[in-house]
Length: 394
Image 1 (cartoon, rainbow, N blue to C red):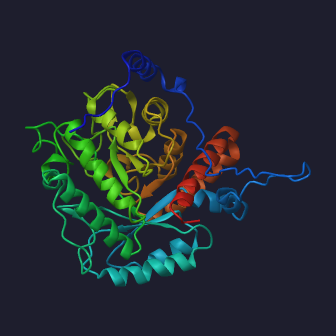
Image 2 (cartoon, rainbow, N blue to C red):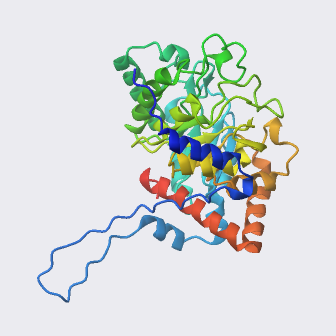
Image 3 (cartoon, one colour):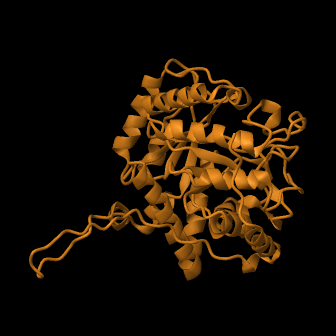
């Protein structure tokens, strides 16, 4: 199988120097490229002026006040056992709704709800997100959804069978109105360490034990989802393959090994450049060799310098859960959202819907008081809306 590409040694040295510097020296995240194209038309008279096509992102922004723009930066959880709270979130203009938990509901019943949300949205349509990996991580299990093997079993399939499985997954999610799958896992768990790797290996969530194994399999899943209009999410950058605890349940999870040249990191870099435009979910663990002072969620070195700068990713970066996860409970909810956006992130995922208003208010207050942060919010909103334009949600 094809190994992940690596950068020349000189570039690796540069990024290592950048990551070892203080957090204030990290380079600013680049602005997202707006989804516009200019067409030129042959003209027989000099008085004719070529007019570029309408920009859907600019058109969306023109119809939104500042609070509506900031709301687009949040994906909020709703329990699959009762999706009715999603109605109020959609009416509020939330960027996305995450279907949390497990459900035996038929795909057609879910489609009725997601279709209603699409019609009721006051602005851009919300992402409808779900965790549909396989094995023990499969939210939708009712009629219309095949039972998925865990990733380690998927990784043993011949390429054509894995591609077929991924295509079926994409078609079934699309039939229920799901537009964003928080999958596949791109973490690399070394052989022999699976049981000790509590968040990934212990549940068979990894596609392989080397980047060479993981990359082609994850790419097949990304492409299969994209073929049916479902956006994928590569998780959990820069990798959870070397930790021994789950950040949802334990505070202070640390990976003291991973560096900018680790094969987990280069695997994410190769996959993130896919033409399918996947999202990247950032890990909640701390990586001292990348940034000893902050978890990856709040780290400019990890998000802006490494992922956006060195690896060249300019798409959507989404958090893992920052609402209910134990690892963030000592940080005020509003600060969680502000610090992530300051680091160069795009979408804040919270499974705790109760903290969503506080997070929005905190981002609004900081943006009003700090012009530099306001510019950062502008960039994040444009990145978020560009992704929606590409997904047909504008």
